[in-house]
Length: 302
Image (cartoon, rainbow, N blue to C red; front, side):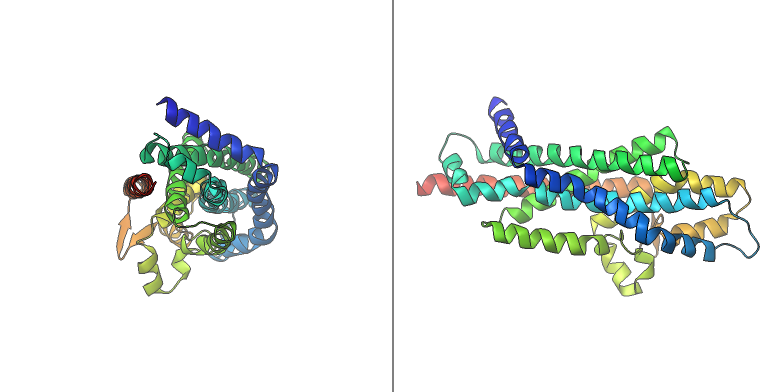
């Protein structure tokens, strides 16, 4: 346990020591929040207004609260994964500097090395993502707050689980990288593509039916659905109180991916958690096994 703790501290300190990487990782989600609020809020607002029954009057603050919930759910659904790729650069840097080779010939087990990298990346990413979540909640507080304490706590849980998934995914992918150029390229691809395939930038319901079915196999899709449900639940509940029909509310939820469908079956939020949790377990197990095998091969070679 002492060896794992030492590795976690070492990897965390190396990340925070590089102020450029740390501040870039920290500022990026906040910049995304500003960009979302500036360029996407009006688009989302017009979309919701167009979906309302003719003659139905909706308070502006309620629409803003719903739009804000969609915006911060998109931000968190993307950041928890993309930030983890940036935070996980230490694993690749150790290969570049030769530190990983030195670690492999020590008595430290491969599984301990894997856990050290994983937990350190998870710790760093959680700090950044919870700061981003706090900024999003402040934004909601200023434009239209309809969240309950349970909604906020569930969103915090969603951040934790998706960050575990993002860290596991980045760990498996980064395991095969050995240069800074490779990690930069992979990070750029993930940053530009992940938001689309998880439904954060554009709702999956707006895609072609075939693509919707393909994306229903991706765990990130269900993480976005969890964020959507918890960030907008209060606003939809308020809409129901002022007289909007269940059918219209259901149509809105379908439109913004609060309701996720696996082919034609609606996936319950409980099952979304199970899918995300199972994905984390599988990816972490694969990552640990790869490190154990690699460490044994290195020791045999030496």
